[in-house]
Length: 183
Image (tube, rainbow, N blue to C red):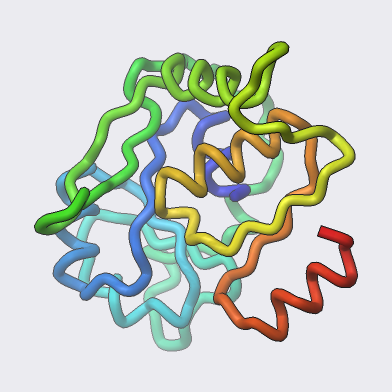
């Protein structure tokens, strides 16, 4: 979430990959999207270690025995280096979708189109989604899917709702979150 929003804030194009992809599928998406930086977890290092010319950033810890020059910890990206000169481009979001067949393909979304879609769903007198600032939304869908990214995360943020993310579905965790947060 912070990576996606941070990339948007810096004026970078953001895309997300399915962590269940094979190394070849991740490489295909990384190269097709012209990725310069990949943010991941150390547990996925074996899937991304062979990517060339792409800086790897780890949100938890850098894997042992890796070249420190090529890898960063996420906290290094969060250091305050002043305000960014952001130029919002028409191609700031590049989700990947396979539709119903084949390998995923990039679906170019404009920044303005994405913002308009989100506003259309939650704003005004007749929204599609009735999210409010006092709501707690439980997201059990993976954020690399456009529906959960757009209609759950971004729409929830626009409505100022609390959003709970489940990194992996587990019925006991789900029920505990529902009970604890009154979802």
